[in-house]
Amino acid sequence: MTHLRSPLPLGPMEPSLGAMLADRARRWPDRTAYQERGAAGAFVPLAWPDLHDRIRRAGSWLLSAGVGKGDRVATLSRNSADMLVWELAIMSCGALSVPIFARYGPDQIAYLLEHSGARMLLVGDELQLERAREARAPRLLDALVLSGPAAGANAGGTGALTFDEVLAHPVDPAFDEAVRGLGPQEPCLVMYTSGTTGQPKGVVLVHGNILSQQKALEALWRIAPGDVFLSYLPWHHSFGGLFERFTALAQGATLSLDDSEGRDIPRLVANWREIMPTHFFSVPKVYQALVTECRLNPEVEGTVFHPGLKFVFTAAAPLPKDCSDYFARKGIPVLEGWGLTETSPCVTLTSPDGVRVPGIVGMPLPGVEVRIAEEREIHVRGPNVMRGYFHDPERTARVLGEDGWLRTGDLGEVTEGGLRIICRLDGVFKLSNGEKVPSAQVEAALTATSRFIEQAVVLGAGHDYVGALVFPNVRNLTAWAREHGLADLPLADLLAEPAVASLFATEVDERNATLEPGYLRVRAFSVVPHELSIEAGELTPSLKVVRSRVAELQRPLVEAIYAEDGDPDLQCRVVRLARPAVVPDRLPEPARD
Image (cartoon, rainbow, N blue to C red; front, side, top):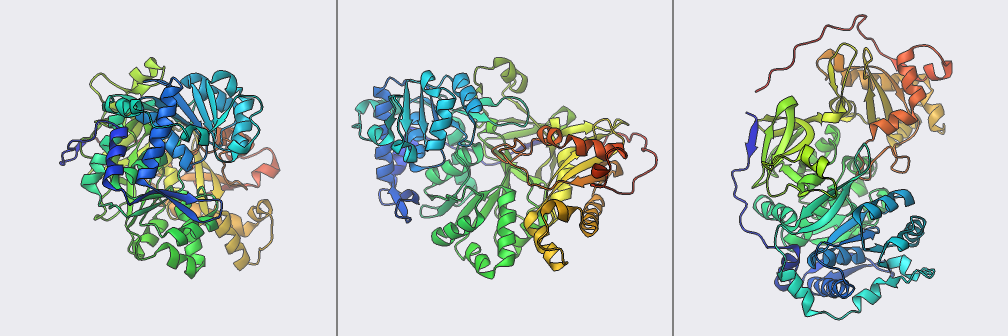
């Protein structure tokens, strides 16, 4: 079996996002659409009629400023009510929203503004305003709009205006006419994928791409008006900006902004305690941190696993099994999905009623088809597939066939339980004997059940064996060190202790035992004394590991893993495990269905 299709029909959907928002405002006049902490520290609710009024006012201002169908308008901001209104207004009036990651530097901001040809930019705080000025953004734009803390900053003669001034614009009937004139095939978003290689690609999505996801979720999930999402995922990225945000808006849940940004776990727990979410969407790294807090503190555990929590959703990387099992023991389903920005974003989902199997990402959404093509590459076709890459017809033609099938670049296989993800096509490398190593599979094995290995990057292209750079779970390692009389040592010194080297050797050895064939097993590794970061370029904004960047930054260690001689200070940081004296002959290719 190499083909999957949902047996459920997709059904009719609204013609545009603007039409969907108008319908929800009429349907739920007394419900809270969104809430965030105000200046006084309490969560301030925004009811559906008020949200829709702001969208209409901002959209009317955009039209009065000359923004028309097909124009691009950018946002450089952390998640906020202003950003929400601004983006929804842009898309509702026929323009294309271009969200830019709030932590990007001036060079990346300049590239995205120039590549997208954005006419206007909303900036959310003073740091982003400074970076936009360094990127010489005001010179490129018709208007610079300041929001939140940036609104109080000196505009510096740029002619910038505040978002409050935008919202003061009266509602123009032309806005409602613009909404009525949009159909599902009109483009509404250029979402740049951060990627792990090269410059970001601008994925062009249409209204029907996003709305088809929501129509499919109506048939699969039971999210009700009155449910509550606690949301930290950044909206410049498809997981948060498309999947989570529009699920809440379309299905009627209250979208509650978590200002921890997934980095400040005590703040996340405090927000959780106040909001008591019914659903939570996150990446594995944050779930691991939450579970660690729950294990250390029964009060936190009682807060997180409150009676109203219905399910949690994970994506972007495999969730370690011990973390998933923890939720299972608490009776909370862990749902998983797979997709790309190019599929807006979801292709498959696991069932709320099923048993989670690591590596299995479920069945296609209604209306979506999946097939396994040559080299086990996953192809996708359906109403969720992008229009193409912005101003890049050659790259579009390479991945999107005339028959509508998108070449995803992910490798997978069809199983009885649904689609299983193996690896990225560009994450496969060959050993010296020609054996192919799917790096993601090995990395997932190393991290899946380990309390001490937070992340791993496997290596070995052209070498005789697989090596790895291992990044520790600093919190768990520090707790272990206290228990073993190694407290208060700096991380680098702690990792130099023989007992710690032995601990990680055992961790890697135990996980090696789960890897078959044997050539996939790690034979030498080094534990790197820091955590990966976005700022260093080691992680994308969606927290995917940029292997090439990690290998570049750790080049001396990589060389030491394979040299077995040389700088003794580096060699002492390499742990070598037993390995065959002779590289095995090439094994036959696995059978295909």
